[in-house]
Length: 376
Image 1: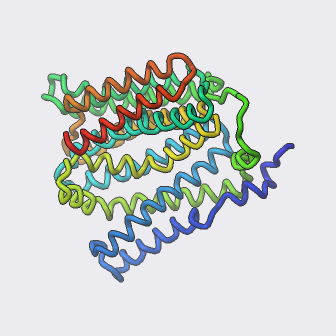
Image 2: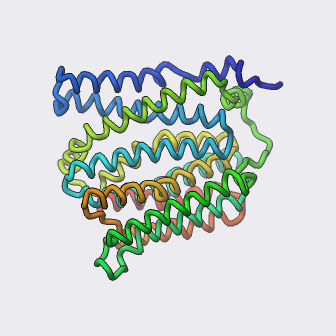
Image 3: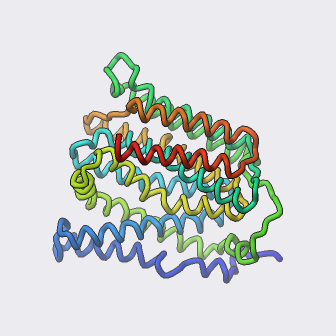
């Protein structure tokens, strides 16, 4: 049966009430704050801001998924990754502008946490869920290996190399080094996008396999209509803008709560990464459960790559303009975990087939990361 892109009643029903209510409620809260009806630092306002921030994040990713379903793969995964990266950059820059204690290391902590959550938490859970349901799943090694090679290069250059430079003693880059490395990172990410969307797009498409998915699952992934997509685009911009402003409102309170809980300041980065990646992680796990591991990996790896390839350059240029130091080099514990993750990721993606065992290995590394984030 052919599905009309302009007359799809099922796809047009893909706007649940919360997907439009969350961004509008967030803006209503901000209007209350900016008009002085309520204090932006009151406990009730902060709690409401946190709830609406989470709602706006989920709404953002939901509408990005609608747009992704319309434009197809691998463009859909790119849209999702860009949406998540915009949210992440907004949160990091908001804290940087507050010039609070520990803000110079927030970009490093958030990017590292994102890489660990994606490559171990999201990928590990996806492989476990897919392996438990289908025993073994297939994906294209060309695309996934290329993505991991870019992630590894960007991660080591951004998070490990600063510890060993001589112009400025680590874990910092000199401003000139930081600017050029930010530029090189964006260029490398751009080259990968060219390969992913134009030159070798076929390497990132799903390998069709027999699936036990129901008819409902097939309907769920039907291409939405142009009207549905246009509405999602407008709501996506609305939600992302609300996230940026709410992030600025909540940044000081988040740091205060982490300090009050006697946790390391670096845990702020873990919280930011977890909040931003939760909806996208759910989407990746759902794709693996529907026997679409290629989409799951493309989504996860693309998110990690966009985080390093775009977040680090934007934050670096912001730090240069503000004249603020930007601490990038990881400590010994984090460096070991990063290198172990890249090594295990290479082994996992080497054969084009995965089982539950590979997922369990990634989840163990993720558990160790969480342990060391709380008890360094």
